[in-house]
Image (cartoon, rainbow, N blue to C red; front, side, top):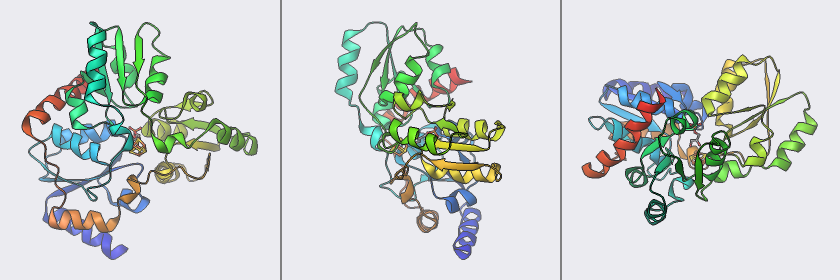
Length: 302
Ligand code: 13P
Ligand code: SF4
């Protein structure tokens, strides 16, 4: 393991590469990454990166976003098949159908989406900036895709907008049921409940805090509470424990893992860097159209 880490450090130097990782990947990959963060932070870092190669320890839409924002870099993925199921839970036909129904409409697309879906959307959001971005939009009607749960969470805070939802969801967060959270709370009554907005509305209703992975980490770090029930993918425990070694964390259930994020290993990070494998390539027209939605997000979220 240590040998593998040394090999990766050397490859980063040899290839003039940077390693970016999402909080949901394995601890040992987070440990050697140059940047670890939520989707918003990683997109901003990818935009600014000047090294020749970005190795993205995450799922496909993350590598695509990095390439869309910074096409001069070579973006490589440790596992070409690590994808986000939710990213595929809406299609162009559905977007067109809603566009035909409303004149004053913004198609707001969670960054967990394909480049093609982004190219048909007006603006992207992440869980960290969705409220601010949607609030700033002039349109009254908001078609929020693909995630119904994040959409409903943001919609509940913006009664002045008319939200139209799509029935996409994250299979990992769907596993975290209100029943499981209630049981965990019964066992640990002093614990605060921290929830990612990809959870269903009955679970977010139980949260002492609701926010992105970074938001959860910042909240827990600032909180006086000593115990927390964590309602998101459990990769966040690595950073939570790093920053809060004296605090105790409980899962709400047993299946809080994203199988696709867990495809990323030290071995495939090493191989991707060594052979510059699994390079992200996008047709230029698609890239430019998808970029408009990401640029608009970055503009409105600042
Ligand atoms: P954030 O880290 O932006 O909160 O996203 C969570 C997620 O599901 C990424 O796939
Ligand atoms: Fe997609 Fe859910 Fe996995 Fe995030 S945790 S990559 S939303 S399937």
